[in-house]
Length: 558
Image 1 (spheres, one colour):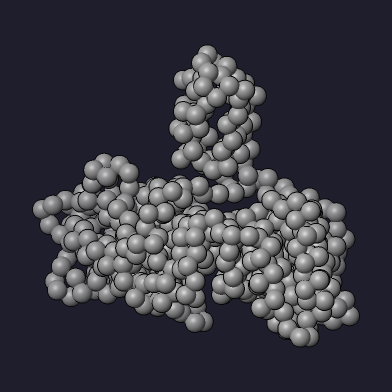
Image 2 (tube, rainbow, N blue to C red):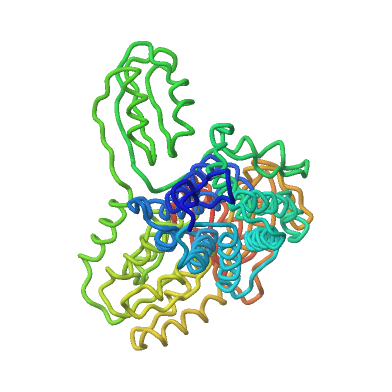
């Protein structure tokens, strides 16, 4: 290896390559760009509901990858890539996070014996990343992140085949191809075109690669706000995307403090902090000239928040808690209260009421999670390892957690059976099918069969304009989604949307409708809707306080 390529990886005197340090920096910068783009990526969910978490999941997966490689200094590209692949796997959240972890596994496999990333190595790595991601899915779908990755890999190989030996030039062709591929996703996947969005996972991958390019070509400072996102050209969605900026990231540091000062402008403080974290609460008696302000924020960088606040006044009652540690203690606490069992059931739920439901039905450990709060592979693995049995049945209860749960089986020291419940009612139906006289494998089979006996309806408010199944949806309308797949109804009145969805999906043989009321629903609303269903359809109705966020009702029809 010529000295200039090893010691000066970006020398312009000969074909350029990247050493391990540069490679790590590339994707650290890419992750920072991804962080800036999370609100916009989350906003382009096909269903216009407030749980679009593709961007969040990709960010948290990449954070785990970068942190894992953080302590590696002076190592070759192969070691850095392998470390990032492990971090991405353990930190993978949601379908997009799992696919991103497969991207890294393929990259690491291709770079196994490479000391630097040159043009040919980059092409090899992207090709292996693409094939690994495709192989990880039973039914890969075009018009998604998979297509964007495949097109990027093809561009890299074409560049190398045309005798390009400069890794920077190859990466430039990769980023351009990724951008074009994202723009074309609505033409490949009709549901995207109808909803008026590009693929969110593909957008996230483009941002990651564009950030890596900016680090490699030294132009990071030229674009301080990060990437230029692939625009959504369809007119009925474009004007609303920029208004969706709130992102709920349930992990990081829960930061609380009291700020004391003179003439504190609460509105200005709120505006300054709202893009630096999540779950922001800023309160005071006087909005314009407060002397005491209370702040609550979930952030990955509490030091920056405190530095800002100390410039305004004096801090009191400072509390900073690592939410990952809190999660682990929560799982351990559940474990300490349980005796050894023949078969343990680990499940996922969000909302105090749903926690109680799953506990009452025999769940051994309930992992906090669900919409906007997808647990990582590491967290599910911790729950499985803490379960008081060598045989574990895992119930994800969310379509975006099934793939994550599937990664746990190969990592666990125990026998893990995945029952792929995609909704909360499916998880409850599966638990009701559990038989203490059967072994874990037999129960897993019976529970999987029980998933088909229930219809799920989820009611939420649209966060943007959209169109689905030929129905135009306005921002703020209530929408009903059937079995996580189809739009069943949309309208301005909650009761009308619920009744239409239940009426359309209840069969002659249906015996019971269960309404799991969300955190925003009061008892009188639940009672009114239940009475209307009974009166109109003559079917038994139960109301349960689920307490779930974002969804006014999760409805089960059996």
